[in-house]
Amino acid sequence: MLEVHKKLVDDIHDSPVKAVVIVTGGGSKVFDMLLSRGNGSKTLLAGYIPYSSKETDVLLGGKPEKYVSEQTARSLAMAAYQKAIALRNSHTDPVVGVACTASLQGVPKEREGRQHMACIAFQTEDSSYSFSMELFPQKVKPAYPIPVDAETARIWEEETLAFKLLEILGMVSGIDYAHQKTIGFEYLNGCTSPYAAVLNKTSPYASCLGLGKFSYNPVDTSNLVIIPGSFNPVHDGHLEIADYLSKRGLDVRFEITMFNVDKPPLDFQTLQERTVQFDTLPFKLLITCAPTFVYKSNILPGARFAVGYDTAVRILDPKYAGPVDEVLKTFKDNGTYFYMFPREVPGMTTEEVEAVISKLPGEIIHEPMKHCHVSSTELRKKA
Image (cartoon, rainbow, N blue to C red; front, side):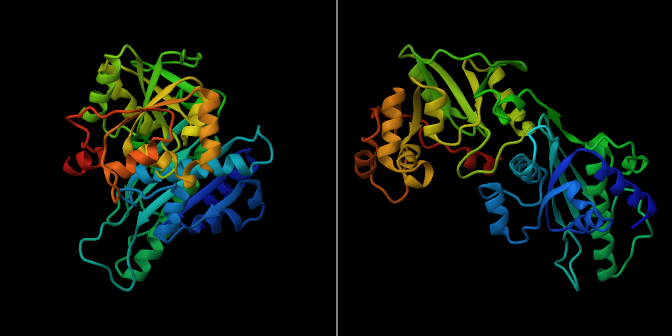
């Protein structure tokens, strides 16, 4: 380790910032660097190396569409941030989640055309940022000449990536460090965000008013119907349901939750990308931290929810929200009501589905929906 990096490690440990770091595919030497000079516990709350894709899925809360990507790195950084919040000794300790997912030199050989790259991200209480770097051939100034044999190349890439992670920690710790210029921070993707109040649960939800404006005031739920979803992207199926309910005289709003039971958490940049879709739509949007309908019911008592048959079945699955009797009691106590729209449920007939979801308080919609089978996942695949 270079002397300048030793000094950086010492400065990081002297700062008040606490971190959880997750690395997969490369960059694990950052742990050696942080621990080699003692006082590692001053900075590192926990470190994770989920080389198994299953373990990565567990940390994310779901399977990503691509493991080596800025999106996945940001999701891992958000997961790391959540762990840091849970592990810090004092609620006043500033914390950061740092994550890296990489594809490095294979040893002794690798498949032809393999791209050597890394995606690094960090999450703080009010910002999400990420960037990608090509490692071999790489586009940052090397610490020493680029090697040509596979084993040395692997070592070089691991160390280069670890240095970058160290520099990220230095930056978020507020350290003035000249070597940070090698990272190329002008290429950072991300944003600071008003969603921070929701992430840190100082507000149960944020109302998006369009064009970057938000409100944290309580919403009137007496005539409110909410359409939850990931909206990646918004499609005709969502809009058809919204139009149908709007014609009934209901106040229709869409809802995106930052945390989902079976999907990776959403960082601020991803939320911003999805939120702007609603700037040109006649329907407002709520951002919540409610992963289950029991949670949604508790923060929005009296509200109605519009869901597909497939979602309605999951609402009554104990795996998602607990014992069915307790779930139904919560809905009854909160005055929660559901509009359930036709949608295919694999392995179940329509009659079987309706027998299950009829337990929910609400109305099963039998009117045919032209776009009921449109899928955001299929739209992304086609795109």
